Amino acid sequence: MNAQDRVLIEQNTLFEGMDFSNVEYMLERCTLRELEAGEKLLEPEVENRHLYMILSGELRVHLVGQSTLEHVSITAGECTGEISLVDGKNPSALVVAVKPTCVLVVPHDTVWSMVDQSHDVARNLLAIIAGRMRNDNSALISSHNKRAQYEHQATVDALTGVHNRRWMSEAFPRVLHRCNCDSSHSAILVIDIDLFKRVNDTYGHLVGDLALKALAKIMQANLRPHDLLVRYGGEEFAILMPDTEIDQARSIAEGLRAMVEANEIRNGEVVFKITISVGIAPITQEGSFEKFFELADRALYRAKKSGRNRVEVSV
Image (cartoon, rainbow, N blue to C red; front, top):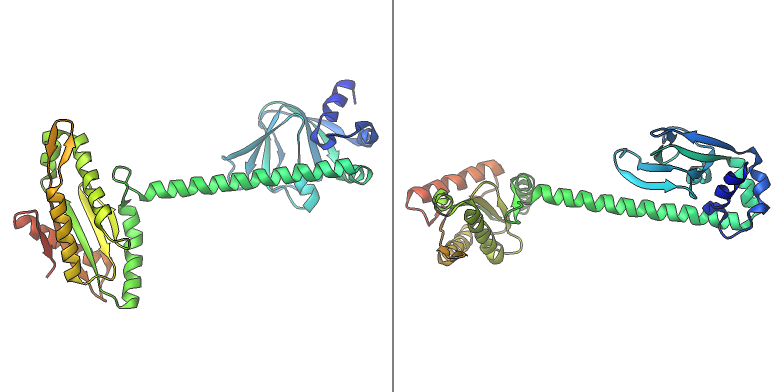
């Protein structure tokens, strides 16, 4: 190796805090490899029998099965391939050159000879592997958190903060099934803001959004912890009330209706009120979620036809 390469190799983390001359002779069989940008160095499907020390350039690690998710960069002074050497399995990640990169290719038997020869090399190799595992754990945690965040965003209405129709289609049938198994009474409520188009036409859609948020806030604050609230349409909400007799469901609905009617919505100098109509359907042991939802929706229609700002129960 020339003097410049020797300096770069000596600076590798594998030789940190030790006298490089004690193991330098063992690297005589090692070769230099020049990688072009985009060239693959390690692949999960290909056996690896070498340790690669990066002398210049940059490598990018991609998690298995997530080739578009960049995990970490490896630059001069670092190495890669150590984990597959230790466990004897194929690499767990895809490693690709980001730009022209030069690596020192160290055969596996040379690595183990250096470990046998030097406690410092052994210690540094363990430190490198431990650091890699910490990075992998951090990446997995970050990936899990992002996935949870995406799932949350996919099931929550961005405007009101309550669950959306997608969540309803999965959660409501599941809860109804449990209630049926327990032979408990339940009820479903369908709620609609009266003459909501008039609110938007009079005050604008931004003020209409305030009305939706105000309604959602009132319901969130006054429903029981086990009640399930969703916004499933523009000004339309639904509530599933497990373990609830129909008279109790109607009483809760009347309370919500009265609170909404009494609440003032303010936006600067604009002050107005809204009202809601509510349709309720008791849930029996037989029938699908769609059936009971339709019954509640019919009751809502009757509430609208009967003058709005009222609660109707399915017959």
